[in-house]
Amino acid sequence: MSQTHRSRHLMMGAFVILWISITAAGLWWFQGNTVRPFLGQDDDPMQVQTAYLTSRLTPVLQQIGADEPVAMIHFWNPSCLCNQVSRRHFQGLINSQTADTMRRIVVTPSSTTDSQIQEFEQLNQGFNMEVIRLSLDDFSIPASPAVALFQNTRDQGYRLSYFGAYGFGALCTLSDDNFFPNMVSKMMSGRYGPFINVAGSGCFCAWGS
Image (cartoon, one colour):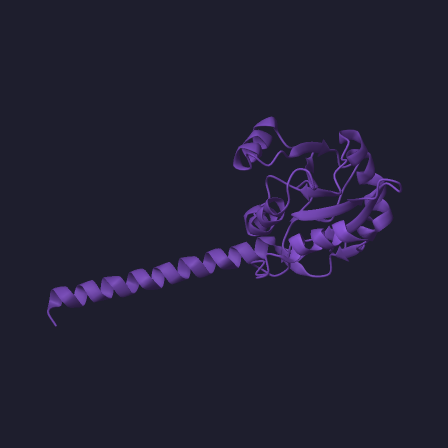
């Protein structure tokens, strides 16, 4: 092997080692800063109780006149890096239903700017979603991204069927994208839940952080 070829191999080896080191450091930083329990020890457990969620979110549904059989509320903190991790499940859910069967609502902290909302709407054009700001005094949850699904029972009002994470795990590796669409189908055919899914760790951010 010539000196030139040996030098090239050494440079390639050094590049590979550097790339692996940078990738490992990035993953370590990501996990250290974003992987956390959905419901931490210092969080208020009342924020994930059915009574609290129903009492705080039913006025939102009534305000916008959600008459569809199912109402989906996506909890979005624009500064959270984990939004991209849950995006596949979020899009799978909104793609699974038409506007006639499921109302799509986005709740975001009151600190969210108009430009952040406009960017979100541009990324989700065609899905007819309503973005609503809520102050931390009016509503708070332990972590986001998260989703709530309500059944519209017509005669008995809105009934919470699901609240919690889109999935758990450092990279949210839930392989079954039909989990939430199947849940919505069950909700439309009869009573479902409430299923409160907050026991686990994954990529989450504090609400309103």
